[in-house]
Image (cartoon, rainbow, N blue to C red; front, side):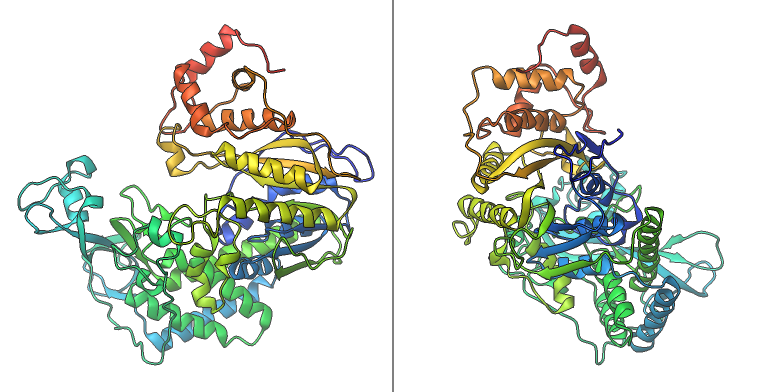
Length: 596
């Protein structure tokens, strides 16, 4: 849709009601981070609420996408986050370097690393017996049969079952295999994928040892404990699989290659180039680990929201991953530079990223023109737990006790409670209110499947003194695997962007109790507007409540999903969208009126 933009000097900025973007631009692909908001989704809001040369603040800056968007739009940016990894990523996104120098330094670093650890991805080709390059090795978990205790190689069992999981069975006794209920024994290499001059394409062969065994002498790599107090330790059953520290997620070969490569990067003299190469290094760590999931059709990549290692996983060539990532990062730099040139941006715009807490900002009163921020969504994701994977290699760590999240279970429940989360969000909004200039705006990205969490944010906005005036729907263009399963899980695959204004005095409009029938009327109105999925309907209902300042405490995703199911709605498991025939039938009936 075309966005109507207004100068910040006008009284009524008009952000878009809906924003649909894809997670495929060169910026987004340069470095992974949890729940990134794509730059194209932020730009329209910066343009609507600010003028060139003004300053944008993000108090939960994460990977720094707000800073990139501000730089593209010729605005300054102040970024704050408690995460060490986030600052590393966000700072290097706007550390624009010469592509030629970057590629030259990357190749030199790989050469230096190979000189130390050896050419550990050189293998013999079964077809021609000459030296080939290993692209990746496919590994399989081996389980003990629950019935006869015989070892079961998961990949081989799946192969014997004609790649149908429901037919997995023990070759010794015929007992059905359910991996999550079986005892893990070890991992075994099953397939090598190589690149050899004797064939024009990559080919598969039996796994083999490298021609040049790794020389690990003098190499050091981090092995940081992932303690039982970490939420991800509990959620991903790390103790069951012997994964209680970061080094356990890598093969010995890849640990040696990564350690040698990090040492080579550290020897680069130019600060900007060295930092950019380290940016590429942290970007490949998840893929270089056992977290990269195998699929018969194609690799599934590494899930960045958990520590899950699939029953079949990949060991990728670290040097190949690194050089390809450097190419992707150079594309990101060029994309940012090109966008700045296209918009006539000046060289004066600056992005300042500091590690700091959102509830105690180091900024003067009334010094900021606009705030765009994306706080953690309650108990959805534990950033510091996942960031530990990269921070181990950086040698600097986030204080996870300060994180604005809600613990799901375990020893810290009560310390990082919903009450503490509400206090942190409220205090951070108060700080934003303090540093914003009078009459200026804040846009808050949020999503959750719990009405209680929405009500918490609703109260924080009200308590901080903001006047909520615009609610926009953000579609990032990619649904989660869980969200695709049926569409009726407790999963929300869209976000809302809540835009609010700093008023002269705190709002006196209280949060009201919805009238009888408001939920049903809102649901019907959203459906009649053409909502195409349970998530879309849910957030449409949330928006109706927010716009009328009605209490959201009981408006859960599960409540909406049940109401849709009762109406006969079904969801296509492949897309997560409603089955088209039911939507058409609803449109033709036209029985419902829009919510008041």
